Amino acid sequence: MLDFPWREGVARVLRTLPFLLVRIAAYFGIAAAFVVAAGGGAGIGWALGAIGGPAGRAPGAFWGTVGGLAFIGIIVWWLREYLLFLVEAGHVAAMVRNPATAPAHFGQIGHALSIVQQRFREVRSLLAAEQLVRGTVSLLVDKADILAALVGPSVSLPPGPANAVLRSALRFMNEVILAWPLRAASRDPWPELRDALILLAQNQNALLRKATILAALAYGIVSIVFVLALIPASALAASFAGAPGAGTLLLAAVFAWSTKRALIDPFLIALMIEEVSRATRGQSPEPEWDTMLTAASPQFREIKVRAAPRNTRPGRYS
Image 1 (spheres, one colour):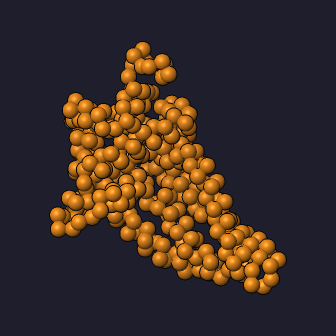
Image 2 (cartoon, one colour):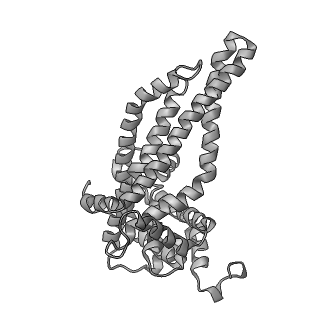
Image 3 (cartoon, one colour):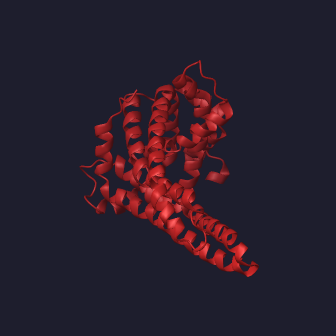
């Protein structure tokens, strides 16, 4: 069950160490911004709550903490497409490039970002591709019934909530699929995305089961990080004006999220890139899987439209 290409996956990540450092700076910088915003919000809430008397200080500090965290959360949501473009897609591009031809050290960052820009040209195009891939992968997750295969027929799980959790856990598979156009010589990403999704569908039972196991391992590690982070988070929250412990759980959750995005996700992606390459080696996209995806997924149909030769596309894509 755990027969993953660990050595190859770790090697793939370590040879992109500059991008790993960029991820650490980006996501732990976000965590630091959450801490500052929570502390500042608690202080402002404490001061405003005092207008209503001493009894209003603690609730004011609590809601100030929540407001500060929400403010940074909105900023992160707004910046998500740029993080995807500059950090995550760039890192995937660096992972899949031939190390013999890629620049060494921090030169690989500019080289990888230039590849992303050549393939997708702008942030909106990459974001659209990620959303279309996500919709198609979600369909495969729903149809494959992976959890039933893992836990056995004796355990009954509600399919709706179980699949929703699984789709969220397998979000990193979107970047695995985006690796196809980033390692290809062609500058048109859409045919590569189409073929990658068909190959994933052909091997969905084995690959999505492996991805689920990796996701479970990752969330187990994240849970441990969350528990360990409660100690420093409690100390930080206790220093907030009038709100001892009010933001402990939220701050620990932010640190665990940052750890996952900065350090754990790259290894998940690298391992699955190795797994998918190994499983699909020598295969070609099969027409019956193309037909199945076309009939079942509007997102895949959109990818096929964009992958069609330019002179055969509908006018809005020409």
